[in-house]
Image (cartoon, rainbow, N blue to C red; front, side, top):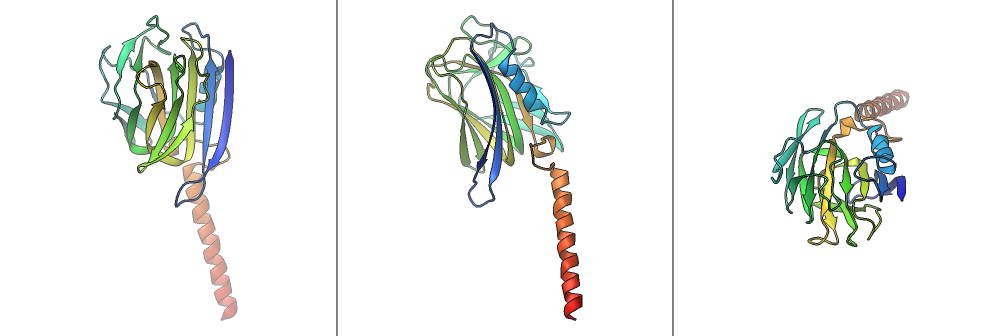
Length: 239
């Protein structure tokens, strides 16, 4: 079974104007250790909203069996360092015969725990391929973290589905976040595989219907000049 969804939702943030999250999702319950169908479609749709220069982590540069302490991604103003926090996991070589496999190259990150990643610079885009998720009745959620405030987004995968399934999930946000947490209800029971993690800062994201950061700044400056001119006109008339 394959499922492909692109959805957007307005989400209120405490003490700030409403922010929009746009999610991209595709799932294939029987991918036969290959990337195709709905996950690939969701991945490609997600990348159409990213500018050139955005990088992905395929875990090929890590020794099998090691646990990455951090990963470096390309950012607009320099490197974005993603530091692994709570939770454990390690780089594995696949396919491993138990459902996990690499979506590019031969290696992927495997875990059975809830784990978190913090970013040195706030980001507005995060995406990944996931393998063998939900076959032990576990439900995966991606939690966006902004200054310690958490916003949970349910990944709409099949629960208690096939071993060896493949999904892609990506999120774009008008309200950048400084960390993510992978939360799963079957922590310690269900082993998950992750590969081709993608991170982008606000300047690297073209959010549907929302001006790019530079354009937005120019619009704000333009509105300010219009307001200033109007005030000058009112002052002149009143004088």
